[in-house]
Length: 72
Image 1 (tube, rainbow, N blue to C red):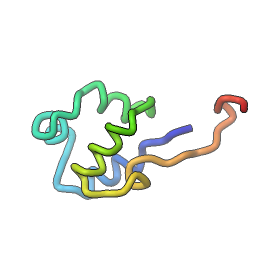
Image 2: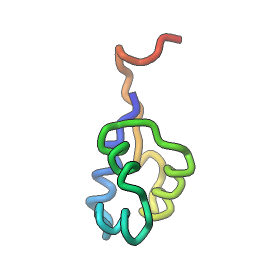
Image 3: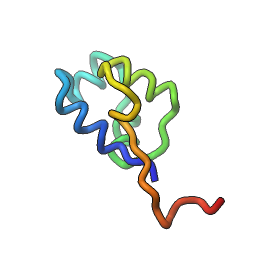
Image 4: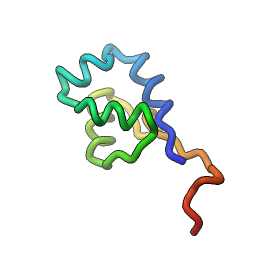
């Protein structure tokens, strides 16, 4: 399972917040909803967030093994 809890910690440590991401940086509210609910994001969105927050991908997302993961 992809988990975005590192994103929220990174955002809290930054000078930004939900408002600045959506208004200043034009991150859509649907993207913020996807982050909040651990839904899929594009690599472009991850790239944008890394650039805005001056961080690495690991500061936004982590993988947690789950029994609900797709069987391979």
